[in-house]
Each structure stands twice: as structure tokens, then as C-alpha cells.
Image 1 (cartoon, rainbow, N blue to C red):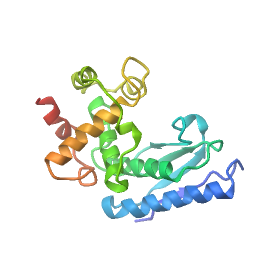
Image 2 (tube, one colour):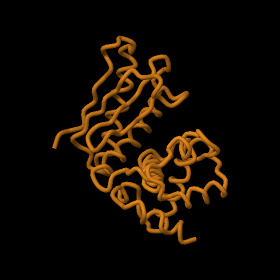
Image 3 (tube, rainbow, N blue to C red):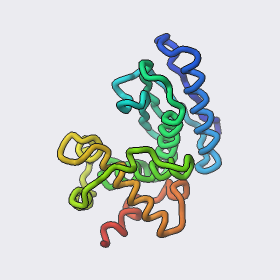
Amino acid sequence: MGAPELHLPTGSGRFDSAALTIITAAFDRAVELTVPLIGLSDLDVAAIDAPDETIPGWGCGGYTYGPHSVLLALDPAVPAQPDRLLATLVHEFHHVIRERGPGCGSSLRERIVSEGLAMLFEEEVLGVASEFAHQPIEPSHLTLAIEALDQDPADDGRWFFHSAEIPLWFGYTAGYQWARSYATANVTTASQLVHTPADVITAPIEAR
């Protein structure tokens, strides 16, 4: 098995050596923290100059393209922030290992659970989950989500990114709450739940 590798955006010339050093250090730390928990290996992380793909205000954003590839989008206009880079990478690394089991899926059930477990993994590794896990959400919206869990493919814009009536980041917060509730009830962790099927996580929610 090969160690995870980081590929830096040096071609554009828009990242100075200090920024590249911060990015590399965050990657190294994320690998160091997650390998003992989820056995991360055989992975390419492509850091690219892609401001439009970053989380507003964060200067970075992540996307997992399968069991062996992660994209780390960066905005050279935003100073590299180690904590946010680290949280993004830890989050995506959980997705990577989940892709090697049941996958992150395309249904709303699978998408919410996968994001929720990744948020919970941030908490396990870093002591706190990112702000996306802690948004105010309405019980009525949770009811709507539960009724739509088998929607496939999920409307990510509606459930995660506020393209409709559902608040921004809803899916991350709902998923985190469900994953955390399941983990607490079963005395387990996000790293141990990385291959747990989504319907197992949501079963207690649907039974209420």
C-alpha cells in the first residue's frame, strides 16, 4: 500500500512558498491523525487553483472523487488557514474510506449519512466539527428530510446548499446530529462507523 500523496498547484504561480508550506503541513497533519484510525493509503490529493469551488470565506473546499482521489480547491486570494485546511482534509479522508465500503451513495439517505459521519469524524479527530454541523434547523425541515430519504438522486442543492426553501448547510447538520446520536447510543465512533450502511444509521430516526 502506498502512502497518500499531495499534488500542489505550482503551475499557476499564484501560491507563494509560505502558502504551499501551510497547505503541505495541513495535509501531513491530516494524514498523521487519520491513518491510525481509518488506515488511509493509496490516495492522491490534487490541490488546485479553483476559487469558485471553495467554501465562501474559507479559501478552500474539498470533494472526494472516489476511493483514491480527492480534490482540494484553493483560492489564492484568501490566506491559507491551517485549521480549515485540516478540517477539510480530515472530512474528505473519511469519505475516501467510506467509498471503499458501502460508498457515499446518491440517495438523500446515503448523502446525509455520509456527510454526517464525516462531520462526526472531524469531531473525533480534531475535537470539534466544523460550523456546518452546528446550524439551526427546524423540526419541520427534519420531517421533510425523513420523508424524502429515499429520493435518488438527492437534490444536493436543496438539502445542502440552500437552492430552495431548506436553509444552507441543513444536510450537514442533520447528518451530524443523526450520526452523533447513533454513535452515542451504540458507544462507537465515526471511524468505527465508516462502513456502516446508511439505513442502519437512520433506522432509529425513522422509528421515532
